[in-house]
Length: 428
Image (cartoon, rainbow, N blue to C red; front, top):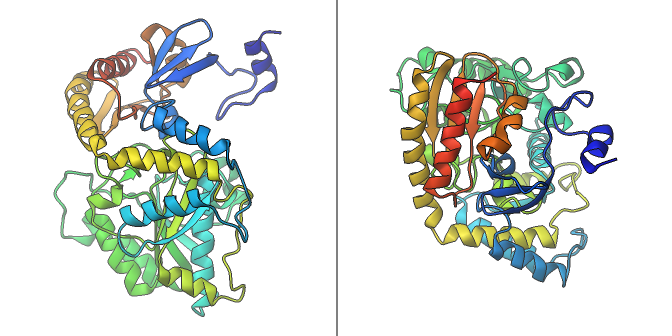
């Protein structure tokens, strides 16, 4: 049995039919933006391996830090013990985050980061004498991960977890913010889409612990970009009702939108922030949930006295070392110029797709390029064409998109945009 035959017979892949998985490529190496297949074929990783390899694969600064760390201390429990990589990473995060976000809880993955944030919100409300506030508000079109509670705040109709709707906690779903990024903000609260939030908090605020959302960019929920003013209005409403505001920046953090964080586009600071993906430059799974003293000290006053969560690999030294190296690369500052150049080039090279009969919209923000189709796109078609085009794309829903590493060259980016337009012109 060949490796690919064994894979097809025994291994489950994400969001894949085990009986008919479609084309599968055996990857034997990766460097920079390139993936190498077992047969020698090379493909540009236009997905940054699900949006995390922001510096490209096997960046020597990150792999060097990991090699050094694994020879000294690959892992130790974080309960009652600490280590220099965790402290050094914490210093960097506190320095780069807005004032008021300085209590860091390290996690295993983005979904776990969301779970921790939701727990923080409930424990905060219980400690504040509001034990009835155990529900959450969010906006439709959102995606916050695949773990159980995180699924409950993902879009229940158009999201990926509708199958579990009857088994999940029922949350409060608001309409998607209707005003897109770059449009004029209407002063009418109904037209602006903020009135539904005001009504919800007036009617059910005594049951809601927090509002959770992806700021400005809704990723897996449709690659939709909405107006930052919605976040500013939401911040004021949450403050008025003492409801916490949680930002999920797992996909957008660390430069993807052209700003260090998507929340910088709005100038809004949440009470709790979820980070992941690009935190380690895609070299090892790691995440963080960050709050401020107001939340952290209040949780200390809760009946439990402590935050009731503690992953086995919390604060893993190997992951912390990778994250330190990734943040050091960002501190050099070239990412901002690179992302701006990527955005300009994608605006130009994706624009012709707007004239194609099957295309509904073309949009770009930072290092995110999207061709939205009028009908769903079968990802297996893109997978099958990838070796020939030399570009690895994984469309979802109606979206053909790319989120390339920031180090991609203009020549390689042209190959990516060309493959996207070609797929849009012949998606089946």
